Amino acid sequence: MSEQSARPVARTLAAVLLFQLGIGALLILGDMRETPFSIPFSTPDSPRLSEPVRPGDQRRTYAPDRDRPSVQPARDPGTLPDRLTLTREGGQWRLEGTIAPQDAARVIPQLDRAEPPIDALVLQSPGGSVRDALEIGRHLRSRAVETTVLSGEICYSACPYLFAGGTTRNAEAGASLGVHQHSFGENVLLPAFTAIDDIQRGQAEVMSYLDDMGLDVRVMRHALATPAGDIYVLLPEELRLYKFVTDDAG
Image (tube, rainbow, N blue to C red; front, top):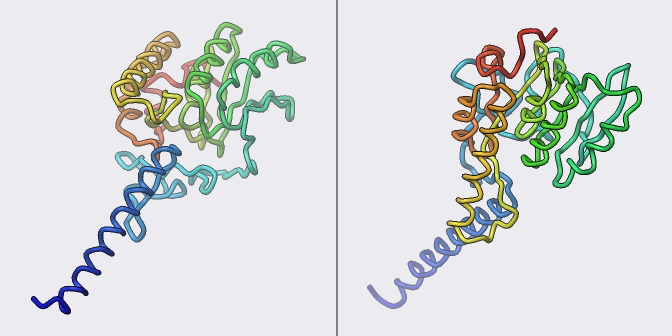
């Protein structure tokens, strides 16, 4: 091959290499930001959250800020708060929004000071900090607070652990609860063996918590098998099977 004819081939190979390096960099950035990333022009692994859920077809793209689950009646709560917010609406106490780190220390005193005292709490959250959810959930149990997710509203990711803290737990027909994998590390640049150790201890903590709350820890098989960029939406029969909802819930 002549030098002149080799030049276009070399340029093509260099362009392909640069493209591959660019895609690799974007994937790494997506992992570091703990947000799902899909290669342009690729087909997503899971349907959108707005697609109906059927038995055996329950994984959906985790984008509650973009999509609402296809349940009826649909509710539009607007933009949920970036941190958990306690409000009283229509005679009901509501705790909703993203579960941010350190929210347990901030929210628990609010729960204790609430007037009238909280005996039942409506939850709506896309999830967030697992450890804060566990701490608040244990506090709800110690205060004998009932938990509810209303029809057309969501409780995803770490939110079901808040829900599990209720002495009685009610998910109305049309409520949407879902689980997936969690990140427990504070620093994505930690060595791999340190990050894995942190994840394993975190998962053990979650399983111990679920057992303490009286739930069936087998629900974790769905969480562990579902990537953080997806959500596994629990069917009503699974909510009963794994004891998320209680027999005496209204």
